[in-house]
Length: 112
Length: 116
Image (tube, rainbow over all chains, first blue to last red; front, side, top):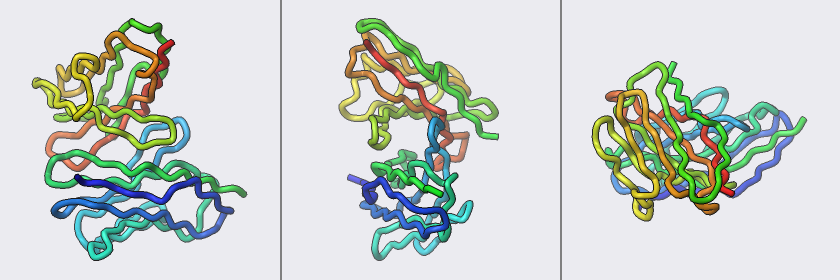
């Protein structure tokens, strides 16, 4: 079945460091890919998405490119802030089933 | 816009009792609502999908008689955990999908259930 694999956390960075969180997927057909963010004590929020190969999703300085050849959707940010500390979930929707399949989540901690 | 609320945010109950969790879309109509369960430091696992006015579709391994889902209107879905046991303690999250926007789900803040 469809699945999403994320790098294990926690990821600990200093402010202004470069961030990469790896995400790879297995899916039949052509899924849409998402990154969600969960701040402490809050619900998940959509961070960015991409619906077809080579699309780049971007928001709040974060970017991810849909790579069909490597089945990846890695999340990047050039300069993280303390306020970016959260749990990040990679997810996909495939086959028109409107069902989100999540990765295990990666906790990011940014310190001053 | 696109706000989803859950009530209560936190509940503690005794083993054997039932607990109802509400999920409301505050500023849009939700054709479909989803219920997830999140274990500590783990991902969200889809429990069931509910469409307004019809029976919920449960994921494999989820007991439909234990987790009763009702989606009576386009803005409200409820999850009732019946005869709760300590192993049902978890974080329950709902999401709502607006009419026609099938790939868009807006998430509630979650409900922390602790069964003693």
